Amino acid sequence: MEKETKKKQEENEEPVEHEHKPRVITVPGEVLVSGPGYLPGEGTRREGQDIVSSKFGVIEKNDKLIKVIPLSGAYIPRIGNNVIGEVTDVTFNGWIVDIASPQAAFLPASECFGFINKRDLTEYYTFGDNIVTKIKAIKSRGVDLTMKDRALRKLEGGMIIHINPTRVPRIIGRAGSMINTIKDETGCSIVVGQNGIVWIKGTNVENELLAKEAIEMIVEKPFVEGLTEKVKEFLSSKVKKPKKAEEKKEEKEEKKESKEEE
Image (cartoon, rainbow, N blue to C red; front, side, top):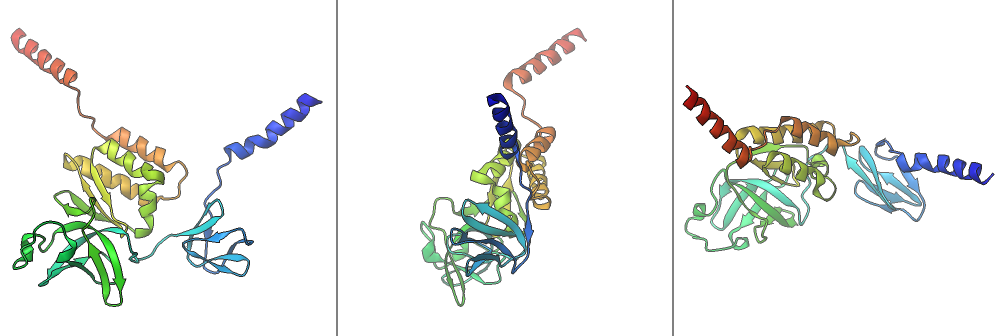
């Protein structure tokens, strides 16, 4: 009897351990959960005892916090966001920066480190420069930016790609797992702006294009189960690993021997 009971318990527990819940798409106004124990997160609101969706997207439940990840949408600036922008104009006291937002963005010269020649601000940043910057304030007239942080800088070389801002969390992954996989496999430096603008720079164009292809793959299929592993397999099958010093040495010796034989 004890063995049979134990066996039944194991059979009942097994599906719970290996269960992979499919992603559920919701629409605005749909009741997601009910009860005072749940908290409304991004893309949701509370109506009485109910947590209701306010966006068209995918439900994400993190313990008691309920969120809706939108499937599409424009970038809405938020204080503290790190974004990538392009300098489009220079004023007497700062720069106008395009951050792919409905609001205009302004970077004051006072929000930059180091010496700035105020007679000619183009010596610091000029038209067409791409920068990683942070949103400091949101006002009625627009967005104020700052460069006062270690991670903020001018981006030199590489390539810029644009993705849907709603895909940014999936590109980054949990604790940076997805973006670190792409970086490790391609050897590229990658900066993902929360406004959906991505900068990629590698040792060669081939690796940059491969990183771009991987990012586009994630954007197209963001909710596939086991996506991180699929991306890793894809990159491992395509990336050209640099040859080790020993392998290069052996190749040189083989070439030398073949020449001597000739």
